[in-house]
Image 1 (cartoon, rainbow, N blue to C red):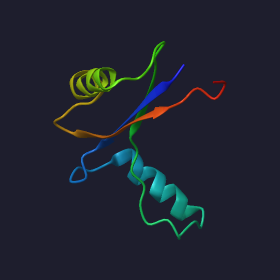
Image 2: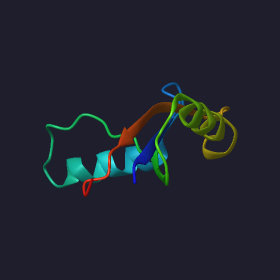
Image 3: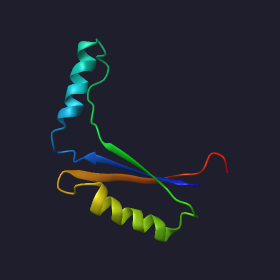
Length: 86
């Protein structure tokens, strides 16, 4: 069964306190090559049929309406992972 992956990130212009905390922790551990961290969300939606353009459009609508808060977040990608056993 294919899985549709939706990735949501905080809008670039907004502060990301969780990402800033991780970035600070990395720096304290001497991992100075990393200059920034932003933390988002990943949703995996399994589909029991073929992923059609209509299914992707429905997931896009879900992502916009339910999975993200459009005031503070952007849906940055929707992709399809094919079933590894197929």
